[in-house]
Image 1: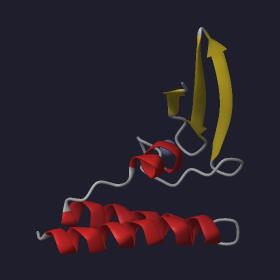
Image 2 (image 1 turned 90 degrees about the vertical axis):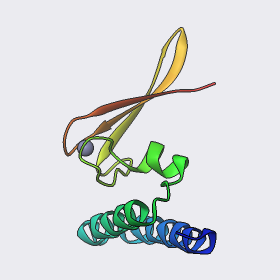
Image 3 (image 1 turned 45 degrees about the vertical axis):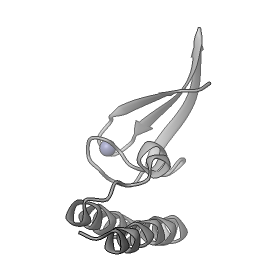
Image 4 (image 1 turned 180 degrees about the vertical axis):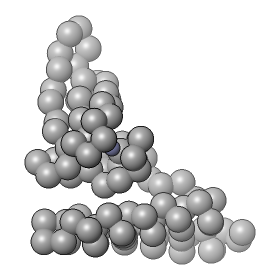
Length: 100
Ligand SMILES: [Zn+2]
């Protein structure tokens, strides 16, 4: 896979996440579909999904779109280290992201 093609794949992934964020409120199913397509592109082109999306917008278990207030719950915990705790409301997986 050439560099150029990877770049195009990455741009598509970014666009799909953007679209998913925009349409989620009105059409959550379509947003899920966009994310699925983005994941497929990433696997096919062997391009990684940008870390920021992976961290904050994708459930690591069900691989679905997580949106605060809709499909996930976000809490800030502080027990020595401050962490963001994200709970996917669809599968219940908890993700902890330490903040610095
Ligand atoms: Zn999940």
